[in-house]
Amino acid sequence: MTINNSLYYRTFQRDVYGMKMETKSTEYKTVVSDVLIIGAGGAGLRAAIEACDGGASVVIVSKSLLGKAHTVMAEGGIAASVADVDPKDNWEVHFSDTIREGVYMSDWRMVEILVKEAPKAVYELESYGALFDRTPDGKIMQRAFGAHTYKRLCHVGDKTGMELIRTLEDQVLHRDIKVMDELFITKIITKGNAVSGAFGLELRTGKFVVFQTKAIIMCSGGCGRLYKVTSNSWESTGDGVALAYNAGAVLRDMEMIQFHPTGMVYPPGVRGLLVTEGVRGEGGILLNSNGERFMLKYSPIKKELDARDVVARAIYAEIERGRGTKHGGVYLDISHMGAAFIHKKLPAMYTQFKEFAGVDITKEEMEVAPTVHYQMGGIRVDPESCKTNVKGLFAAGEVASGVHGANRLGGNSLADILVFGRRAGFSAAKYTKSAKHIYAVDEKAINEQIARVNSYASIKNPVNPYGLMERLRNAMSEHVGIIRDANGMQKALSTIKRIREKAGRVGVSGGLRFNPGLLVCLELDGMLIVAEAIIRSALERKESRGAHARSDFPKNNPNYAKNILCYKKNEEMELSMSPVPEMPDRLKKLVMT
Image (cartoon, rainbow, N blue to C red; front, side, top):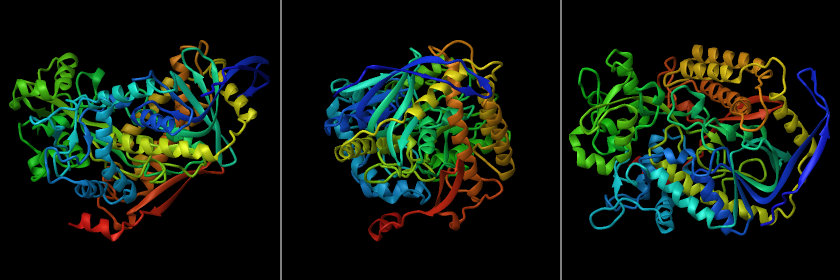
């Protein structure tokens, strides 16, 4: 792989918000590759491995440090019908479970690919060195998860995501793959309807980087940080969705935001931190403040292991009706399983509660409440290749849509990043072989981005970006939460409009290097785009379906068994509805049985 590290110096004149800026000498370095991967989580690392093995030169960029992606916070396991614990399990049952719990909004072909290839992905990860928990006879141990017919989650205690990242990172580091971490991409640059590169800022140096590339794979994760209470790490601000949208990509199902039933509620500093579904999968039960096992009322058959939207709304209802804990949650109890069992199966959960809350889960109940967890919607991609409608732009993982429909099954996310990360890497490498020339990166676009980034650190009397971000999170949490209505969402839209008016004046003191406030300025524009897409799509869906629950339209409406698309047209956000692709008869039979 050839990397061009030469420095280019450019001088330009700019006028920002009516304030004349002096002529400056600026510099950027140009990095050339066949494939640029934005995001170093499970999807990005798996895509990089496949693209490199396919003969492409590959560069990975990550907003955070390598190994620190949000994937490490996935705990419960990888959903795959390897049938090592329940021999009756197979891809057909996994398919049916996924389609049903997605409330018939999933792209059937993406689901079929996922469930057929997930076992291969698990075995491949094992061949890379992943150390899965084992049954007494040496097979891969699998645990129960909500709405899965059989015990299907292949796991490494309650640290599966961490093991996945460790394993894939080792593979990346042993290949000719360049990794540039602590780098924020501010724009995908296009020529016509094809990518030509991207512009970024090295956060620790304050230096600009221009990427010239034939293909970009977006693997940047979700947008949970749009909300005040979330299980997501700080990186999850929806950057990739906004970048793709501004580049011309179509978004799909943006209204579908999953609330995980169980996040920590106390102490305040860790509110929202994930309490893995593995606790319930291993026998944990939910109790209200009266000591009642309330899931027997809401879901007498599946109980605590019903779909996430069902359990989350049940917990929400108990809290709203005054049967919550003193810290605003409910109790989750697994102490009856015994200390030895808990230490073996849930060591991270034991440590998490002991260190952060002073609670010994081998003896005491946990306090939990719903927390924003996952973005089912995202960039629309082709099922086979993960390509978008923008030539040369691919997407995989949480940033992409199609697999999960209106509600994601636990464990399907880790299967998703492995299966479609591999496909995106393969497809991008194949594409680069036919795309013989790398388009020249538009000089005007480069200068615009340099001016934009510099402006945040030089504007007089700036607006505080943290205050605007807090207002956005408050509006999303209050009005676009687990239960929604038109009146509240219109209020949220109005808030976004007011924030956007002020966002043009945000700024920070200090320079470009090691400046967290500058990163907030850069993230805010994208967060406003993603929030608007979520709200407008949620207003358009006048029904309740899966994770999207409206008090003013509480019932499911068959007329809305469609995907809502969102795209940029003439600098405005436009929406349309598209019929969900119809399943062939051979697959309909699986769902009907």
